[in-house]
Length: 370
Image 1: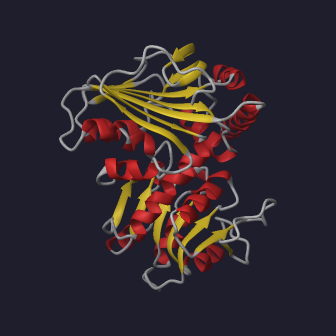
Image 2 (image 1 turned 120 degrees about the vertical axis):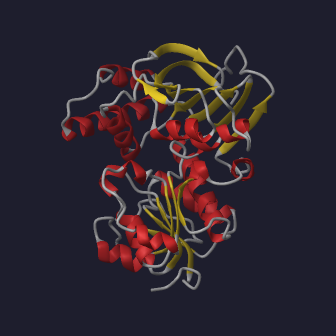
């Protein structure tokens, strides 16, 4: 078993033909990382960058032998596949068992089953939740909280825009929407989750989200982790959607979904198609806004897949540069979030990162200004 450092490939990307995987490849190449190798299930219809080596055999996450062979050639493996409930721990287990380190855009800590690779984390490094949400959305509040954190403050985070939700991302979203436990419309208050405390905001105008949007209170595990990390008294966390077809799909499912996986999958397919319809003739955009103790932060970007792939690429670079010790941690919990955010802000997927010495502007930016 190699220990990663002597493997011939710096970074191998599983799921490299998808929107997130391609974004990982592009950012790694921009950063000068190499050699980079791509694993795909089917030969991509659109050629991969010429500098990327394409693994000659198909790699499906359900094929343990194919995964193991690919991972054995890599120092770091990036998992750009999903949804998390379908992929599970397969890529992580294969990468770590082969002696590679891991970056995963999914938050595998959400899975009900414990990771089967815990003993390998004594030697290997794994960064999970290394995307936009989870990932950047949980990292950015650290720029406002600072090293000392804050005691009892109110944090409001809004993440979203006008995206195309690929199938895997839509399934992850709808899967969470269908879970019991008060995640949707909940807040974090006084050290506990309070269900039903916030309402869905429809046809509202918000700073840095062009036009009318729908904001869904959506208290994820990442939001709870941020609250605990910085000692926050209250957290309001919203997912924002800008398209009318997307809003119509979400309205149909706002009361929840039947506890049948087929219904969740059907809703996810509907959501993915709606985001494409909303994008017809319009440019995708993403924004993350954070407000804490009278200060604010705004990150704007091209689209959710590009930001997810960019975040994963920078996590891989941090692992390659030995910036992280062995063990598993979330991207949002990496040390020195300001340093990582400044590096990510230089990427083409990011159109702006602003720290404001006051609250967000009263009026939103009009479409086309971002």
